[in-house]
Length: 454
Image (tube, rainbow, N blue to C red; front, side):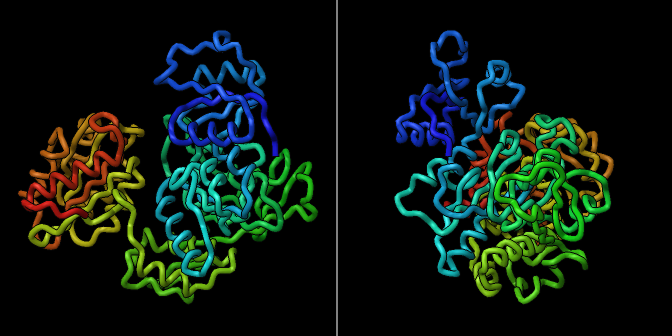
């Protein structure tokens, strides 16, 4: 564990404040800057030489402040890795493009069902630095890890690492899918033969058939072979055999943990919200994680049946005259939107739009033509979405979310679903996806004339 005398913290959000509290508790002198409080920051002005710079996930490595620190040779460390380095229990880490928070919550609930204490942290739950300062040490930390946090990992090593999926997301920051996937695979970079890596079967197959190196267990990476990642080059200290075991999940016949016909092995998911093609494979991933932790399948099934969905993630707001109104405001990319559409039974009236992270909407066209009755477009992406989908699905350009809800009310029929799944960020019209989801719920309550909350 590295101790620091002087630390510069970039970002004054939850993670930045947690890092500051942790470092100050260790006697470290801390100087914090943020784009809100110190927009004109200049390194020479602070008369402070840090041992390390703790960077919040919102700062791209191309940000001028970061580039300046790199030129000066100041080490960069994410809040996630700082907190991890102070852990007192094993770690389960979950990364992926979509569905991470739901999976983290399900894992935490299942561990609790089995009599274990677990703290959710990272992008969901506590900042990691806050989690490791809790007075009671849990049996497990369950971390939701983003690609932004993985960009700067150096020693981060979970005992169980889960890559849930890799779908187009954050390409505005990472540039292309190859770079994005490589960053996601850094989750496994320092894991050892006593740990467990869990990956989708389709990704495992792709890596096994290719010559592509996986960044893992050594300076030059390794290749997938026969259920292991075999390292090349120098192995880290303590890694005798140098083989990281891989478990796979999915709906394919070859997966170690397979979702099929509503089941994952002995786990029966029929009648739960996970009995569908999207969340069923997430159930297989959770089963793999819990198996690696020694948790019985019965605990996974029981928590699936009592699972309370997170707000703004395919959560039912209300049923109005036989039409379901579903809030999936958290869907900020095209892949998440498509997943939500597939989860709906019956025809869908889809509310989409906002500030786009992607430029090519055509990949969703065939699915929308099959499953969506009408589109109600809002925000900055309305024009691009209309151009991409307008010849396949009737589109209404509604401007605002409230207008979209009212328009969908007029068109939706008994047994259909009005789904808010924007495939965009909320920042053109809202502070965040939470506010967007609350606006949707309020607009639905206006239709019903009551104050019932979803």
